[in-house]
Length: 534
Ligand code: GLN
Image 1 (cartoon, protein in one colour):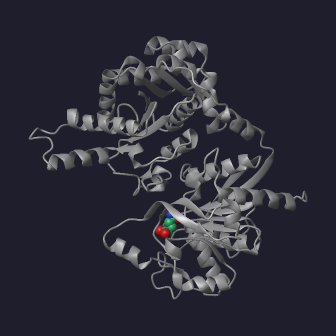
Image 2 (image 1 turned 30 degrees about the vertical axis):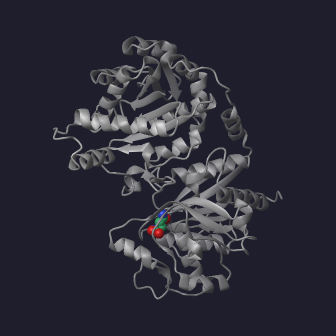
Image 3 (image 1 turned 120 degrees about the vertical axis):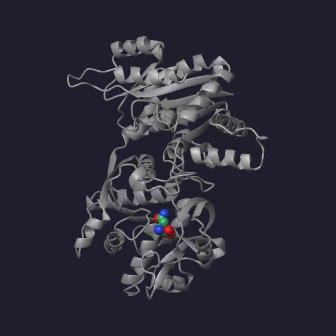
């Protein structure tokens, strides 16, 4: 078994996650089983309680673990499905060690960061790699080298380096190569961060230099000289037009052959699937505009999986999807709105803010027969909007937003109330859903049983289902023996579909998400009709 560890220097936000995911992709293309692990040095056990305004999207794995959005990149690039074990946090490691200490497993020793915490980190990494039968285990250490929080993890990595054979361990360090005002590439920050790494006993095998432009030969030579790596191991990572280009940029830089040589990987059948996918992306001839009406739109990363799911569905339909981000709160000052887009998407969310504006967007899409996709909160608001404007239950609402509404069309089920009372959590992760035949949902999934990922607490109130269906809404997917509504659609509309689950978490380059496929296809069709091209 081999280990590739990815660290980052200089500053955060350099695309370490994309770098790790892209390295994973090129190894998969070489025929290897790659098992990724993300280390997040924060003390939280998981990302469940983290605010998207601060932290970007909370990504949900199939077992319901809430994680950093980098795990989403791993799933999409590497084409795997991960579980909570693939995400190590300081919180998880310390909990384990403290639990063992309480059970007396340390036999009276003083429990310390070295060796107890570091042993636990190494054990975790090796156990997961072994369990998943990894050829190569890819470990990304979050944060920046030099952060106090990441010290125990880097120390564990240092120990692993000593314990593994030379050909079984490779350290990739991602740094920034800024340009000065005259446009010259500066290597000092890279030199400093490598120095920092070395002071921790680690030496990089590969340096990935992030720069606006390709690294010049002279820059590579300088980094090579000062950081003590061969020039061919200095990889130029210029800003890419699209993240899916990065594995190809790395191949152009011959990172694949360098890794193969260093790790003594024998040649296996390689695949060109990724190249074809990127080729398709570059050649997408159709254009389509989707308005995403949400609340966290100013935070670039808060809807990253939705953006990727839209992009992937676009590529499979030979279309380039442009997303316009609309802040739903901006609608709330107006009585009437207009959204210029070929499709409208209302994503998930929590809390009252911006909710009325989102419902205005839903009403607009429903009334004007514009392709619509609602996700999670977007699903619940579609039900509320329908109840208010079609059933004329003026004050219909979710009890999340109005505890005393006369028409709680969205509410907590009794067992969820109990969970809440016990301080419990949301309904999370993969859940089996049954789809009704002869519906839009069935035509998209072509299956009766599907699994999609969840992250919510509230449900369609069973008492209102008949009334809603009587007025033209169809619940085409359900779970939990028919007690929970999972998909809704309006048959008289060109495309109006919403899901209680989050289909965006399962969209991958080679397996696009069915609801996103249907939505984007309908938006393309709508655009053509508007342009008189049908
Ligand atoms: N706030 C809603 C709920 O808890 C929707 C959650 C979401 O959109 N992820 O059910």
